[in-house]
Amino acid sequence: YRQLLGQTLVVNIVFSFISFLSIITFFPVYASQSHLLSLVGLAALTLVVTSLRTVAKLGFDAGEKMHISTGFTLINSLFATSGSLIGFYFIRTLTGLFLGNLFGAVLSLFLEWSIALKFFTWPKLVFRLKSLLPLIKQGLPLSLAAATALITARLDTLMIGKFLTAQE
Image (tube, rainbow, N blue to C red; front, side, top):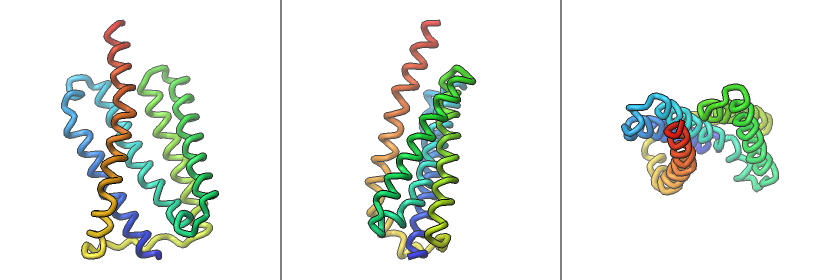
């Protein structure tokens, strides 16, 4: 179990950073506007943190302790929303909103992993390509769907921000 969870964590880390680099690299439309590039960077970094956070609840999902897994989702939602509101309150820009969201996700990451480690041991981080390939194949459609959903969710916010700054 520790090895499977560790491999899942390794795959999440690899794909999160691939997603982060892809988002930053393949969206040159934001390169001319540093403000939008920073928003995309913060959204991509939030994707990485959220992906690492989800591994913490896999042990509870596997043991059918869905009430704990649901609690983790609630914790993340509360922290991300509160962080976004606090960030916007203090900075008063979309950057503050995204920065607060990232801060909330990081707090959620640490809290959820500290709870998970009270129930389970630390995952055994291994990289065995032969056993990872089936995991990657099975998880790739969900990973792409999650990345697309996050981009779509953040894209409307970026477009609204661009529209509002164009009117000023």
